[in-house]
Image 1 (cartoon, rainbow, N blue to C red):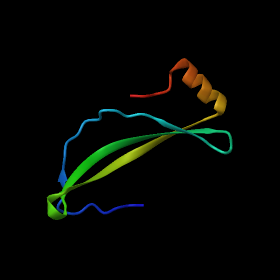
Image 2: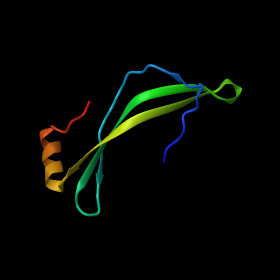
Image 3: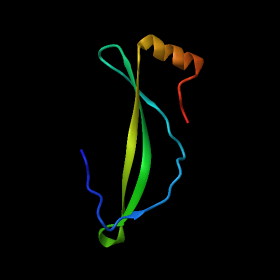
Image 4: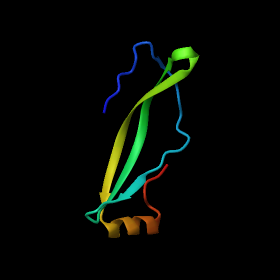
Amino acid sequence: MSISIPPNRKFIGFKPLEENWSYYSLADGLVLGLYIVATKIYKVEGPNGVPQYYHTGQVLSQVFTAEEYRQLRKSNSVIEN
């Protein structure tokens, strides 16, 4: 689903405070890792002066076997910021 960002938007600077991978156990026995990265954040003055925020981003993904995932967690080498 895509949402149009209003034309009166203002780019607002930001810095990540915390970014982590999320992992999901799939019905087929594999593990899906997702990592969402914000690339731009916009601010729009909404009704009654209440700000609204819009963002664009990128989703990174990894797929592991259950054993690969266990080994990664055990060795603590899963990529995390």
